[in-house]
Image (cartoon, rainbow, N blue to C red; front, top):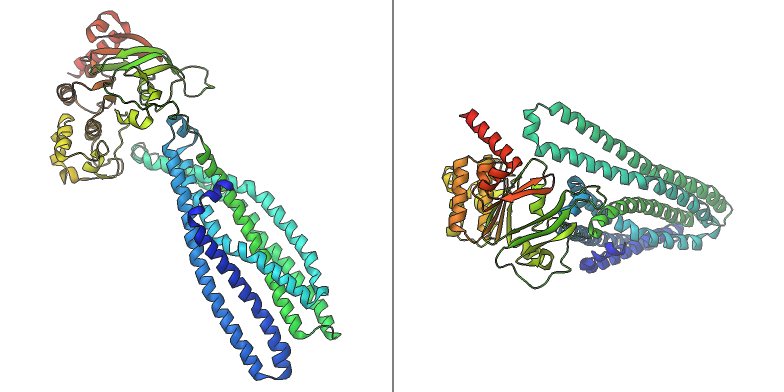
Length: 576
């Protein structure tokens, strides 16, 4: 809770004003039954019309003041509640940006989305809906009880019987509903996961005619959420009838005993009427306060889930960083081993050692699952090595800040990603200050200029989410142009030309060599034709280096390389 209060500091003024308005409104509402008692016991009993009118005007004035305070209170609470929600949302999203891949692997993407949206909305709604009754009820309850004892102490003793019963009911409900709320939020995670997977793979679903399968999977997840929600809210809903049962029992008891007191002359009718008004206020306050507890219980569950995200410590940090910069782009792997989890039995990469000089082009090839992508993801510290070290310009990569290290490296990943917006806006990811000439130069190297004129509005063409309105090859070329625009010291192409024909791929390769000769280039490919011109080729086999050499050397001496080369040559021959 201490951490939650941290996000309220910016809206302290609105919080204080809201509380003042709530308490002031409560006081004015509590005065009205006392005026009503005077009207009955003095004005009506004595037939004094002027007294009745005077007190009636007082009631109207107090009611108007109470209305104004209620409006102001609602406004300040809305600003406070929504502001706190916005602060938590910003903090959580900002925290996610510090995560390494290892951190994000601990949370599923749909769960993070739920924690960033639904869970924060729950807290936000709890503040907006619960703040007024939360501060109003205790004051109203205590004041009403004091006045009730002052009016008739004998009848007020009934509160001491009703209050423990209400407390026991509330405790039982909260104790049982808390784990159900946690289960319900988990069910929301599951539904979000199913929806996200379906929308991302909607083309695959339609291609394989798996709509019915996906629908059944969604129905199952949705039924789980429905069941969890029904159990949670059904139990929480018992709060109201249980409290009403106690409330009406209390009212009947007061009418019974109070009526006897009036008949005996020990209590006036106006006092009994006023007493009943205060009793109703006390009991309504208890009901509202119990609802606040239920809201608090649910928001506490959501806050625990949010706290897991906020308290997650980034596995990769800049604790050992120095004020140094990459100038050349030399890379050296020294006995590097890696596994995704410390508890994993086997290493994904084992004892990797090699060196790349600045400006060299290095090819990496190997069978599927050889950990080629994992290898290059270690260079910008998307994952940290388990043992050994990686050096750039003879400095361990942990001595560079993450921002500088990653800004000096451009990666075009296996899964190409474009964002909603124009072509130019996507290219600006490489360099937001790039001029039109720089954009055209990068696009010329990446062969984007071959198709950009065919798009409806050229560089201003709107791309759908994920670049759905461009082909796979066009998407790859745009991603390569974006990386080139970054002007990095090191360029990593992770199987990023797989959708291109060999002629276009050759043009891109020649463009990189001619225009960016000082840039260190690492190319991962399944096609030997993509890497055969590299200065060195690294063969990975089951997470280990099998051989390093030029195309000619490996073709003459390495069995794995020979198998890949001749099988691809055979495939080309058959195609021809």
